[in-house]
Image (cartoon, rainbow over all chains, first blue to last red; front, side):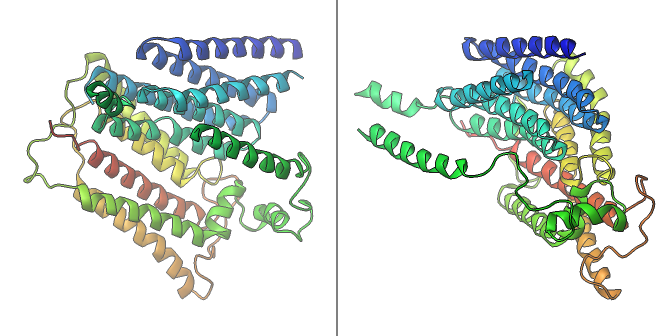
Length: 85
Length: 91
Length: 239
């Protein structure tokens, strides 16, 4: 069980580092907005997995809120880049 | 052991996003950096077994802070040093 | 030259701050003995479940033990919203046709927002009704409902909120918070005392007056934040 958790968390950390690299490097604003969205979704998945590790299933409410509100944040940034806000 | 390494990686990412948000010249990217700092901070609160504080940081940091700063950027400039550049061109 | 001076000042302040923080023993129990009932933290942790029958200790502290501070926070939010509205709000006859959005939204976005808006409002109402059982509460739930209204405000041009109705809801909510406190005074106890029958632990109707106060606070915060966002989105710079 511990080996599986180690592999999963290592893969998540690699995903976070790659997405951060794209956020720093990306020449246009669309790249950075996508990096923010990917970051938010990986953190949501990590929160659900940690709720299973701590064995308190009431912590899943935090991940529920994050999954919904991360979408609204990216929509607001996209509306501003389009020029409509 | 693996948790300590993951915590160090998250702290380095937090520092990188915060430094990027201060230094960069384009203000829209600074607002996105603030969003990333808020996400990582919420994960830290969650790891310290405080779900109430993590939920408060999630509800405020992504949507409301971003929209209020974007309204400010829309009504003023998007480029930080625009006025200084114009005066340097005149000289 | 000024940058060098700033960096030296930061290094000096950082050194003394690090020295102070290194003296704190990290990871030990610093607020006294939690198990006993002598310290404040120990009293809160051991007596909340038996006396108030509320599963979330943070909600019990915010509403019951420190209820007067929550009334102060609600007053600060009310002052901010009223101050902003009194300076920036224009009635419908006076404004010179200010449009909130420049371009219409695409078809995908209109359909998606129409499906998602009732779900977000329902999620916010869930968070502040179950404030005494799950993490969350009045302030968090109100913010989530305001985010749902923000999503509608940036997608549809013709979506208008009714300012008269929002002012009525906000005033009634604030009045009932103070009214609950005065009812505590009139029935012989202290201000904001939790004096009704507490129910069974972990059910929806438990904890006496605590969920009622949080429902009132949730409505007030949601209506205030929606009003602030609606006013701010209409301010445009003149060309």
